[in-house]
Amino acid sequence: MKERIYLLPEEGNFYKGNMHCHTTISDGKLSPEQIKEEYRKKGYQIVAYTDHKKYIPHQELTSEDFLPLAGVEVDINEIRPGKERIRTRMFHINFYDTNPEEMPEEKARYCAADYWNYDLSYVNAYIRKMKKLGFLASYNHPYWSMQNYDEYTQLDGLFAMEIYNHGCELEGLYGYNPQAYDEMLRCQKNIFCLASDDNHNEYPFGHPLCDSFGGFTMIKSRELTYPAVMKALEQGDFYSSMGPEIHSLYIEGKDLVVETSPVQKIYVKMEGKNCYKKVAPSGETLTEARFTLTGKEGYIRVACRSEKGLFANSNAYFLENMPIEFTTE
Image (cartoon, rainbow, N blue to C red; front, top):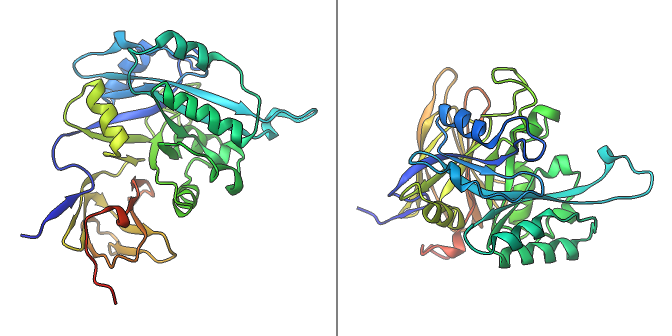
Protein backbone atom coordinates (compact mmCIF):
# COMPACT_ATOMS: atom_id res chain seq x y z
CA MET A 1 0.00 0.00 0.00
CA LYS A 2 1.32 3.43 -0.93
CA GLU A 3 2.09 5.87 1.86
CA ARG A 4 -0.62 8.44 2.50
CA ILE A 5 -0.18 12.09 3.39
CA TYR A 6 -3.39 13.25 5.06
CA LEU A 7 -4.24 16.86 4.24
CA LEU A 8 -7.23 16.59 6.56
CA PRO A 9 -6.20 14.52 9.60
CA GLU A 10 -7.15 10.87 9.57
CA GLU A 11 -7.86 10.87 13.30
CA GLY A 12 -10.23 13.03 15.26
CA ASN A 13 -13.79 14.28 14.79
CA PHE A 14 -15.27 17.00 12.65
CA TYR A 15 -16.90 19.79 14.63
CA LYS A 16 -19.19 22.27 12.89
CA GLY A 17 -18.44 25.91 13.62
CA ASN A 18 -19.62 29.42 12.82
CA MET A 19 -16.50 31.58 12.88
CA HIS A 20 -18.18 35.01 12.63
CA CYS A 21 -21.11 35.96 14.87
CA HIS A 22 -22.65 39.10 16.35
CA THR A 23 -24.89 39.30 19.40
CA THR A 24 -26.69 41.92 21.49
CA ILE A 25 -23.29 42.84 22.90
CA SER A 26 -22.71 44.76 19.67
CA ASP A 27 -25.22 44.99 16.80
CA GLY A 28 -26.78 41.53 16.79
CA LYS A 29 -30.37 40.81 17.80
CA LEU A 30 -29.80 37.61 19.81
CA SER A 31 -28.02 37.21 23.12
CA PRO A 32 -24.92 35.00 23.39
CA GLU A 33 -27.07 32.42 25.20
CA GLN A 34 -29.69 32.45 22.44
CA ILE A 35 -26.98 31.99 19.82
CA LYS A 36 -25.72 28.93 21.65
CA GLU A 37 -29.22 27.46 21.91
CA GLU A 38 -30.14 28.03 18.26
CA TYR A 39 -26.84 26.89 16.78
CA ARG A 40 -26.80 23.73 18.88
CA LYS A 41 -30.23 22.88 17.44
CA LYS A 42 -28.67 23.01 13.95
CA GLY A 43 -25.82 20.67 14.83
CA TYR A 44 -23.11 23.22 15.58
CA GLN A 45 -20.60 22.54 18.33
CA ILE A 46 -18.52 25.72 17.94
CA VAL A 47 -19.33 29.42 17.64
CA ALA A 48 -16.72 32.17 17.56
CA TYR A 49 -18.25 35.23 19.23
CA THR A 50 -16.82 38.16 17.27
CA ASP A 51 -18.77 41.22 18.36
CA HIS A 52 -17.53 44.57 17.07
CA LYS A 53 -14.74 45.93 19.30
CA LYS A 54 -16.09 43.91 22.26
CA TYR A 55 -13.76 41.21 23.51
CA ILE A 56 -15.69 38.87 25.85
CA PRO A 57 -14.58 35.21 26.11
CA HIS A 58 -18.01 33.80 27.13
CA GLN A 59 -16.38 30.85 28.87
CA GLU A 60 -19.57 30.40 30.90
CA LEU A 61 -21.23 29.04 27.74
CA THR A 62 -18.84 26.09 27.52
CA SER A 63 -20.53 22.71 27.88
CA GLU A 64 -19.82 19.12 26.93
CA ASP A 65 -21.24 19.61 23.43
CA PHE A 66 -20.58 23.32 22.81
CA LEU A 67 -17.43 25.43 22.69
CA PRO A 68 -17.50 29.24 22.46
CA LEU A 69 -14.37 30.75 20.92
CA ALA A 70 -13.22 34.09 22.25
CA GLY A 71 -12.98 36.59 19.44
CA VAL A 72 -13.56 40.13 18.27
CA GLU A 73 -14.11 41.93 14.97
CA VAL A 74 -12.04 45.07 14.54
CA ASP A 75 -12.60 47.60 11.77
CA ILE A 76 -10.05 50.09 10.49
CA ASN A 77 -11.83 52.63 8.35
CA GLU A 78 -11.05 55.10 5.62
CA ILE A 79 -12.65 58.41 6.56
CA ARG A 80 -12.60 61.31 4.12
CA PRO A 81 -14.56 64.59 4.37
CA GLY A 82 -17.92 64.27 2.67
CA LYS A 83 -17.47 60.55 2.03
CA GLU A 84 -20.60 58.48 2.61
CA ARG A 85 -20.09 55.49 4.88
CA ILE A 86 -21.52 53.12 2.27
CA ARG A 87 -18.73 54.24 -0.09
CA THR A 88 -15.85 54.09 2.40
CA ARG A 89 -13.29 51.33 2.36
CA MET A 90 -12.63 49.50 5.61
CA PHE A 91 -10.54 46.62 6.81
CA HIS A 92 -12.62 44.24 8.92
CA ILE A 93 -10.51 41.63 10.66
CA ASN A 94 -11.63 38.86 12.98
CA PHE A 95 -9.25 37.95 15.78
CA TYR A 96 -9.52 34.59 17.55
CA ASP A 97 -7.89 34.27 20.95
CA THR A 98 -5.71 31.17 21.27
CA ASN A 99 -5.61 31.47 25.07
CA PRO A 100 -8.37 33.55 26.74
CA GLU A 101 -6.86 33.01 30.19
CA GLU A 102 -3.86 35.21 29.38
CA MET A 103 -4.03 39.04 29.66
CA PRO A 104 -7.83 39.35 29.33
CA GLU A 105 -7.96 42.96 30.54
CA GLU A 106 -5.22 44.14 28.18
CA LYS A 107 -6.92 42.36 25.30
CA ALA A 108 -10.28 43.94 26.10
CA ARG A 109 -8.74 47.44 26.20
CA TYR A 110 -6.82 47.02 22.97
CA CYS A 111 -9.83 45.62 21.09
CA ALA A 112 -12.22 48.38 22.20
CA ALA A 113 -10.36 51.36 20.71
CA ASP A 114 -11.37 53.17 17.53
CA TYR A 115 -8.99 52.93 14.58
CA TRP A 116 -9.14 55.35 11.67
CA ASN A 117 -5.66 55.12 10.17
CA TYR A 118 -6.40 53.51 6.80
CA ASP A 119 -2.78 52.75 6.01
CA LEU A 120 -1.39 49.31 5.25
CA SER A 121 1.68 49.75 7.42
CA TYR A 122 -0.60 50.71 10.30
CA VAL A 123 -2.96 47.78 9.68
CA ASN A 124 -0.06 45.33 9.53
CA ALA A 125 1.41 46.76 12.73
CA TYR A 126 -1.95 46.28 14.43
CA ILE A 127 -2.09 42.64 13.28
CA ARG A 128 1.43 42.08 14.66
CA LYS A 129 0.39 43.52 18.03
CA MET A 130 -2.68 41.29 18.17
CA LYS A 131 -0.61 38.23 17.27
CA LYS A 132 1.73 39.03 20.18
CA LEU A 133 -1.32 39.05 22.43
CA GLY A 134 -2.15 35.53 21.21
CA PHE A 135 -4.75 36.14 18.48
CA LEU A 136 -5.14 34.53 15.06
CA ALA A 137 -6.12 37.10 12.40
CA SER A 138 -8.64 36.49 9.60
CA TYR A 139 -9.42 39.03 6.86
CA ASN A 140 -13.17 39.41 6.33
CA HIS A 141 -15.41 39.90 3.26
CA PRO A 142 -13.09 41.70 0.79
CA TYR A 143 -15.85 42.52 -1.72
CA TRP A 144 -18.09 44.14 0.92
CA SER A 145 -15.10 46.02 2.34
CA MET A 146 -14.45 47.60 -1.08
CA GLN A 147 -10.77 46.70 -1.03
CA ASN A 148 -8.85 45.96 -4.20
CA TYR A 149 -6.03 43.59 -5.10
CA ASP A 150 -3.29 46.10 -4.26
CA GLU A 151 -4.61 46.43 -0.73
CA TYR A 152 -5.53 42.98 0.53
CA THR A 153 -2.55 41.23 -1.06
CA GLN A 154 -0.29 43.47 1.05
CA LEU A 155 -1.73 42.28 4.36
CA ASP A 156 0.77 40.40 6.50
CA GLY A 157 0.41 38.06 9.44
CA LEU A 158 -2.97 36.60 8.50
CA PHE A 159 -3.90 33.09 9.48
CA ALA A 160 -6.93 33.00 7.14
CA MET A 161 -9.46 34.95 5.11
CA GLU A 162 -13.18 34.50 4.53
CA ILE A 163 -13.81 32.74 1.25
CA TYR A 164 -17.54 32.86 2.02
CA ASN A 165 -19.57 35.22 4.18
CA HIS A 166 -23.27 34.34 4.29
CA GLY A 167 -24.49 37.72 5.53
CA CYS A 168 -22.73 39.49 2.67
CA GLU A 169 -24.15 37.01 0.17
CA LEU A 170 -27.67 37.82 1.34
CA GLU A 171 -27.00 41.54 1.47
CA GLY A 172 -25.59 42.00 -2.01
CA LEU A 173 -24.62 38.67 -3.63
CA TYR A 174 -20.99 39.45 -2.78
CA GLY A 175 -20.28 36.85 -0.13
CA TYR A 176 -18.29 34.30 -2.14
CA ASN A 177 -14.69 35.37 -2.76
CA PRO A 178 -12.64 32.52 -4.29
CA GLN A 179 -10.80 34.87 -6.66
CA ALA A 180 -9.51 36.96 -3.78
CA TYR A 181 -8.30 33.80 -2.04
CA ASP A 182 -6.43 32.64 -5.14
CA GLU A 183 -4.93 36.10 -5.58
CA MET A 184 -3.60 35.96 -2.04
CA LEU A 185 -2.16 32.50 -2.64
CA ARG A 186 -0.52 33.55 -5.90
CA CYS A 187 1.22 36.32 -3.95
CA GLN A 188 2.67 33.57 -1.72
CA LYS A 189 0.34 34.35 1.18
CA ASN A 190 0.15 30.87 2.67
CA ILE A 191 -3.17 31.34 4.45
CA PHE A 192 -6.30 29.27 5.07
CA CYS A 193 -9.91 30.00 4.13
CA LEU A 194 -13.03 30.15 6.30
CA ALA A 195 -16.76 30.14 5.60
CA SER A 196 -18.96 31.92 8.13
CA ASP A 197 -22.36 33.45 8.75
CA ASP A 198 -21.48 36.94 10.02
CA ASN A 199 -24.98 36.76 11.44
CA HIS A 200 -26.79 39.70 13.03
CA ASN A 201 -30.24 38.04 12.98
CA GLU A 202 -32.26 41.02 11.84
CA TYR A 203 -34.70 38.54 10.32
CA PRO A 204 -36.31 35.59 12.14
CA PHE A 205 -35.23 31.99 11.60
CA GLY A 206 -36.87 30.56 8.51
CA HIS A 207 -37.03 33.91 6.73
CA PRO A 208 -35.22 33.84 3.34
CA LEU A 209 -33.00 36.71 4.52
CA CYS A 210 -32.07 35.15 7.85
CA ASP A 211 -28.26 35.27 7.97
CA SER A 212 -27.71 32.21 10.16
CA PHE A 213 -26.78 28.66 9.11
CA GLY A 214 -25.44 29.47 5.63
CA GLY A 215 -21.65 29.33 5.90
CA PHE A 216 -19.73 27.07 8.24
CA THR A 217 -16.29 25.68 8.94
CA MET A 218 -15.73 21.99 9.70
CA ILE A 219 -12.84 21.68 12.15
CA LYS A 220 -11.21 18.29 12.66
CA SER A 221 -9.90 17.98 16.19
CA ARG A 222 -9.07 15.19 18.59
CA GLU A 223 -11.57 16.57 21.09
CA LEU A 224 -13.94 19.45 21.69
CA THR A 225 -11.67 21.44 24.00
CA TYR A 226 -10.30 24.94 23.59
CA PRO A 227 -6.62 23.95 23.23
CA ALA A 228 -7.40 21.12 20.78
CA VAL A 229 -9.67 23.24 18.57
CA MET A 230 -7.25 26.19 18.48
CA LYS A 231 -4.41 23.83 17.56
CA ALA A 232 -6.53 22.44 14.71
CA LEU A 233 -7.24 25.96 13.48
CA GLU A 234 -3.58 26.96 13.62
CA GLN A 235 -2.62 23.84 11.67
CA GLY A 236 -5.34 24.28 9.04
CA ASP A 237 -7.14 21.07 9.99
CA PHE A 238 -10.49 22.22 8.61
CA TYR A 239 -12.44 23.03 5.47
CA SER A 240 -15.13 25.60 4.71
CA SER A 241 -18.58 25.01 3.27
CA MET A 242 -22.02 26.26 2.33
CA GLY A 243 -23.40 22.72 2.45
CA PRO A 244 -21.29 19.94 0.87
CA GLU A 245 -19.01 17.85 3.05
CA ILE A 246 -15.40 16.82 2.45
CA HIS A 247 -15.02 13.53 4.27
CA SER A 248 -11.40 12.78 3.45
CA LEU A 249 -8.52 14.47 1.66
CA TYR A 250 -5.12 12.85 1.24
CA ILE A 251 -2.26 12.20 -1.17
CA GLU A 252 -1.47 8.56 -1.93
CA GLY A 253 1.77 8.25 -3.83
CA LYS A 254 1.32 11.09 -6.32
CA ASP A 255 -2.49 10.87 -6.40
CA LEU A 256 -4.73 13.37 -4.65
CA VAL A 257 -7.79 11.56 -3.29
CA VAL A 258 -11.00 13.42 -2.43
CA GLU A 259 -14.01 11.83 -0.71
CA THR A 260 -17.17 13.89 -0.29
CA SER A 261 -20.89 13.88 0.30
CA PRO A 262 -22.84 13.63 -3.00
CA VAL A 263 -21.78 16.56 -5.20
CA GLN A 264 -22.00 17.50 -8.86
CA LYS A 265 -18.43 18.71 -9.37
CA ILE A 266 -15.02 18.18 -7.78
CA TYR A 267 -12.33 20.58 -8.97
CA VAL A 268 -8.69 20.98 -7.96
CA LYS A 269 -7.62 24.60 -8.25
CA MET A 270 -3.94 25.45 -8.55
CA GLU A 271 -1.53 28.32 -9.03
CA GLY A 272 -2.00 28.48 -12.81
CA LYS A 273 -5.11 28.62 -14.97
CA ASN A 274 -5.57 24.88 -15.34
CA CYS A 275 -7.72 22.75 -13.05
CA TYR A 276 -8.16 19.05 -12.51
CA LYS A 277 -11.81 18.16 -12.53
CA LYS A 278 -14.40 15.44 -12.29
CA VAL A 279 -18.02 16.20 -13.17
CA ALA A 280 -21.05 13.95 -12.76
CA PRO A 281 -23.37 13.30 -15.72
CA SER A 282 -26.69 15.10 -15.59
CA GLY A 283 -28.91 13.70 -12.83
CA GLU A 284 -26.03 11.87 -11.13
CA THR A 285 -23.64 12.75 -8.32
CA LEU A 286 -20.05 12.07 -7.24
CA THR A 287 -18.66 11.05 -3.87
CA GLU A 288 -14.98 10.59 -4.74
CA ALA A 289 -12.28 11.60 -7.19
CA ARG A 290 -8.60 10.80 -7.76
CA PHE A 291 -6.16 13.10 -9.56
CA THR A 292 -2.50 12.48 -10.39
CA LEU A 293 -0.22 15.35 -9.41
CA THR A 294 2.84 16.38 -11.42
CA GLY A 295 4.59 18.63 -8.93
CA LYS A 296 4.08 21.66 -11.19
CA GLU A 297 0.79 22.74 -9.62
CA GLY A 298 2.36 25.20 -7.16
CA TYR A 299 -0.47 24.89 -4.68
CA ILE A 300 -3.61 22.77 -4.75
CA ARG A 301 -7.00 23.35 -3.20
CA VAL A 302 -10.23 21.42 -3.64
CA ALA A 303 -13.55 23.05 -4.54
CA CYS A 304 -16.72 20.93 -4.61
CA ARG A 305 -20.10 22.10 -5.89
CA SER A 306 -23.46 20.53 -5.16
CA GLU A 307 -26.39 20.34 -7.55
CA LYS A 308 -27.85 23.33 -5.69
CA GLY A 309 -24.77 25.42 -6.50
CA LEU A 310 -23.37 25.32 -2.96
CA PHE A 311 -19.61 25.06 -2.52
CA ALA A 312 -17.19 23.44 -0.12
CA ASN A 313 -13.55 24.53 -0.22
CA SER A 314 -10.45 22.97 1.26
CA ASN A 315 -7.53 25.05 2.39
CA ALA A 316 -4.65 25.47 -0.06
CA TYR A 317 -1.63 23.19 0.20
CA PHE A 318 1.72 24.20 -1.29
CA LEU A 319 3.41 21.15 -2.78
CA GLU A 320 6.88 22.51 -2.06
CA ASN A 321 6.12 22.03 1.64
CA MET A 322 5.23 18.35 1.24
CA PRO A 323 7.54 15.30 1.35
CA ILE A 324 6.72 14.16 -2.20
CA GLU A 325 9.32 13.43 -4.85
CA PHE A 326 8.33 14.25 -8.42
CA THR A 327 10.34 13.21 -11.47
CA THR A 328 12.10 16.17 -13.08
CA GLU A 329 11.87 16.14 -16.87
